[in-house]
Image (cartoon, rainbow, N blue to C red):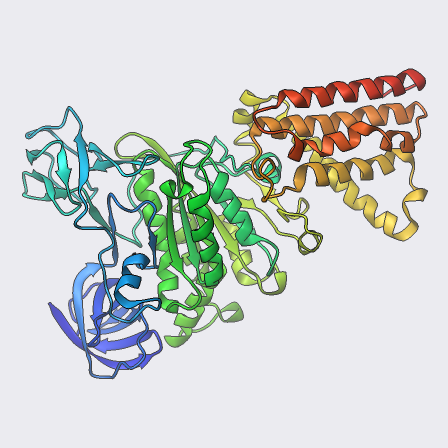
Amino acid sequence: MIEGKITRISGPIVFAEGLDGCGLYDVVDVGEKKLIGEIIRQSKGKATIQVYEEDTGMRIGEKVVCNERPLSLRLGPGLVGTIYDGIQRPLKELSEKSGAFLLPGVHTEPLDLNKIWHFDACDSIKAGAAIKPGLPLGTVKESESITQTIMVPPYIRGRTLASFKGSGDYTVDDVIALTEFDEEIKLSQFWPVRKPRPYADKLEVSEPLITGLRVIDVFFPLSKGGTAAIPGGFGTGKTMTQHSVAKWCDADLIVYIGCGERGNEMTEVLTEFPELIDPRTGRSIMERTILIANTSNMPVAAREVSLYSGITLAEYFRDMGMHVAIMADSTSRWAEALRELSGRMEEMPAEEGFPAYLPTRLASFYERAGRITSLCGREGSVSVIGAVSPPGGDFSEPVTQHTKRFIRCFWALNRELANARHYPAIGWIDSYSEYAGEVKDWWEKHDPKWWTLRTEALDLLKREQRLEQIVRLIGPDALPDSERLILRVAEMIKNGFLQQNGFDKIDCYCTAQKQIMILELMMEFYTRSLSVIKGGCPLTKISALEVYEEIIRIKTGIPNNELDKINDVALHLDKQFGELESIYSKAAI
């Protein structure tokens, strides 16, 4: 045990001496209340400590005790469905000990040490068996939706099981196996939050993360193992977009990190998620969700580590062969915590006061995403979706600009769309996805028309934006019918495809098949309209067609399991345009 004493206090940053022999990022107990801290800088026994709890009332001269281990998470059965703070303290247990407000120095175990779990051992695992890091030893059914694979921890040096208890009922602290070096293997393991978990091989991304949001899945897709950012000013819908993705995406597990956000937003998650039914399992969505709440009223230092805690939890389940999605809301509040801590340490500030190492820290977070082959040979992935809150919606500020360097999917929220109650307010002009070409093969297996429809629709929306500038100057009547048609069809795409009602039982989630069917009808409407216009048909007659509104109403009027009804709309479209084509027989493309 290494002991030192406090020499200086600057908010959540504490300076201490006498800590020779301590390692960087070692955990320390700070002061009489034994607050959790982490050594973030060290030189000749003098250490700079980041305290993750409220240190009001702490005095110079109080004792600092080093635990001689890095800040680590406990990983094992009992994680799913739990809400933690930034350093993996379960908030339910903390509230039982200290009440509604967190008291400094109140600690509790991250996993229930008394709960009994049934462990089903693999048939091939016996005493004397050869082992290696990542080898599956058995499984524990954590919930109806999640079954954990108990694996040999990556840090185990032994290659043979000296003993193995086999199937049975155990707590997370019970030893189920010993190696030839007397290393203990339990149902749970520890892993440092700042150290990426190892894997066998990194794979190319090729399969989209289906979110049920049409503007994302079709126009700006995110792959499993990809990285995305949702930048937008206050009130543009960052949190609601992340909520929707977390509810409906086809990931096996969701890790939701509320980093520096308001408490009411996390309360919304806590009240809504248990009531939501997972469409894949028919059970509560909380059975595949882990929540990390480090709200704006909690100690700022813990905000800095909360992202690493979330990504570590995700990597643990990824190693079992699961596809995990992380919602980080928001990385701007995390960067602000870095700025405050950097200022307390009197470091030279960079742009807008942020530390010069901000890009490095952002990279260390986003680069832990990816699709991999785990040590046990299974394929898994971690997808990261980070919200960015630029002040005043200014995308040129440092956090947004540096984030763009490390992500490949940019869902830019538009203030004008949000003010018009067009949600999700993802602007189709400023947004982009570099994954579109990589998920093209997957989409074409499901519908070969995906790439063509996507390209044509995006081109139409861009042409509409240019025409809108002309309309503002001279009005729509000065345009020919062929260009006014672009405005009309773009309005159809925006109202009937891009806009989505999260409170509508049908429209809150849209299957990939339904998405393509809707967009195909819209583009067919445009193609056939253009044809009859060239034959002399006025736009007013096309606008008066009943099928125009029918196509827009598909999103809310036809459930995902009744897609045959869309074919009825297609027949209606063919009939109505057939009548126009018979009148304007000169139509030619």
